[in-house]
Image (cartoon, rainbow, N blue to C red; front, side, top):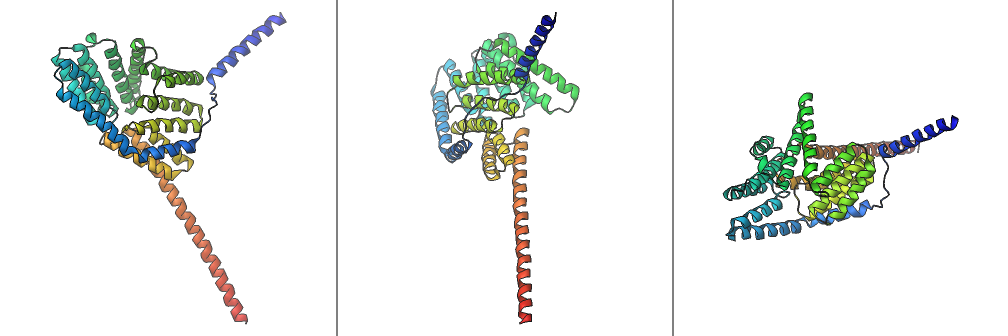
Length: 362
């Protein structure tokens, strides 16, 4: 009887231990050189005009091809390529070419393409705080006409706008309703997305993080990073999601490293919709590296203004936090200088008084 009880206790303890392994954050061993990474970012920022020129050349080549093209089917392909080139680079131009895609698809009477392009336009609108426009486009989509890729883009746009609306409302019930819809659309994406696609991987990462399965999330992140090509916007996206896992783990250096990797890839791709560099700047400011943080936030702010004429809420918060840290550091330096000056003046007065005393005695 005692043996049975002991066995049960052992089983319970093992079960508890397994649960703890999954629930308690552990950290993978990775060697990182943050100083070297920051130097690479500095170098990339100095070369930013060259990267921008390369993207502009890609855009010009594609635009010229579109203007010369006679085939309506081929025009759709080129217009979509232009939309994708502009998507992380210049928002107003991305919106324009999404509408060009819709018009071309309408001329071909391709309801499936019309729905997919409307979904892509809706997503672009919601990422730049144009929620009404996003909802308007989504409500115009004929979901029954969508193919697999179209459904994926459609559900993704709905998921994003619901998440944004839920994040910014102060009404508790409304927030819950939007987040419930967001979860439903996330499930819908996972049902239609290809295994191992970007949609599939980043949503599974979200789910694993939400369940506190951080080691599983890191393993999936390894798989994602193996799939993407270095120095691309896709690799920057994968690196950003890895930084989020380390944020949950509380591993400061690895958060900074993967945010830095993400920012570096985006700078090299002339991506103007900057997020990683802003978040990295916040961490640097908190660490006391205010000068570098200020440089990064200024560069990222200029990029984001180029992409879209107004900063979004999360961007404003990051900029303000870095500026506040910079002001605090400036004030601290001023206070230190004042204290040193005061001490020197007191010492000089003491020396002067002592000198006067000695002269009187003589």
